Length: 436
Image (cartoon, rainbow, N blue to C red; front, top):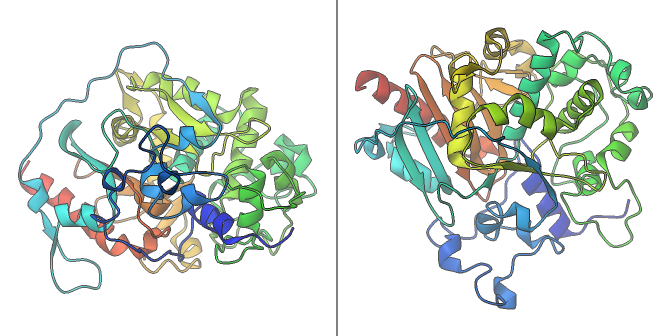
């Protein structure tokens, strides 16, 4: 594959996940406000106000502050149907004291407020549920309660939950090799990996998720999956199904955690093979249509119609909160058991801390990665779904709290603003517990 030009590299950075990489912010949160900047306004919009996929501009800050809320206008997507049932009520009991919650950022000496933290991470929307009630809700930029936003790698946690459901039902053997379900991957690096190793990302693959390298595996995968524009002369794979078999093995599976987005794509291929339906249709059938969601969700698809399950889900803030609350309540929501209790407990229990530590996440000491979820192992039993640029579902069982957030931080890596986000979440939990 020829060298990828800078716009494509920006797109790769925006649509995948990374523990250490960042783009530097050329403008403050206020200066980059997408409504104030007037992106895509006018009939037609002036050339300098257009946000386009084909030139990589939709993945370049500050245009991302508009594009993350308008993915359906930029890339092909498939619907994740909410079904035909009534909307599940989320009681509202807004509090006026929560913006003033204070905390000390990791490694810092001074304090910061919850309101300032939202601005500093370039927040687009955030909602806090306490005991199932909305106690805090805030929208910025072009966001409102009915506006979908891309969730990036939060999508992985939906897929991991689905896979655990299939395992619990006996439809998938977590210790079976991937090749049992997808023979097309038998000769690839995934062939002799177990489903469990793929779920927990302890696979050993010749695949680099380094975004500063235009020849990395993640750059090639992004083009194949259709989430990055192809450079001139590109003649490589044009679909995930074509790209995944080309990934080779490097090392021994099961020896440590390494974050690689392609693992999630393999899970969705297995889900499709076992159920006879594409993963987003299974998500609709088993979870989304049962939540009482306000809206359909959408997911980016490639040229073969395969959903980009590594990071392509687009949904509204309140609907993401419904999913988080369902998990907090042991899989029960909207008057029904949607996910088995045992599945939620298995996820929340986490995996090997020693395996996770090998990945070197300095802001996440003592954590683990289980079934596409990040598990803190803290005193509150908190676990989270994380997506680049600041997307999150943070579940704190002890505090009976769920926080959901959309953001368009110019830095892709959560590690760049974990120092703000993690103590902010903890401080909110403590305030809700102390002053319910």
